[in-house]
Length: 48
View (cartoon, rainbow, N blue to C red):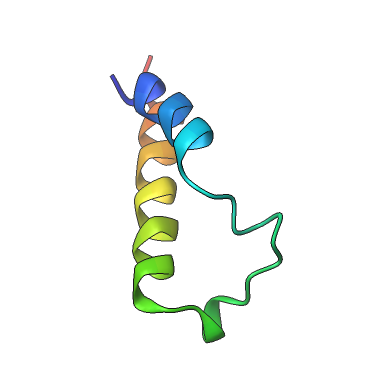
């Protein structure tokens, strides 16, 4: 399930790494997206 979510995140959500976003200067909604992408990615990598 998390692997599917990770693929959807990659397609739908913006990549802040490519935009060189500084987390210290990020807005709340940007931090929420970063946290969500991190959560899904770690779960997708740890699931079999």
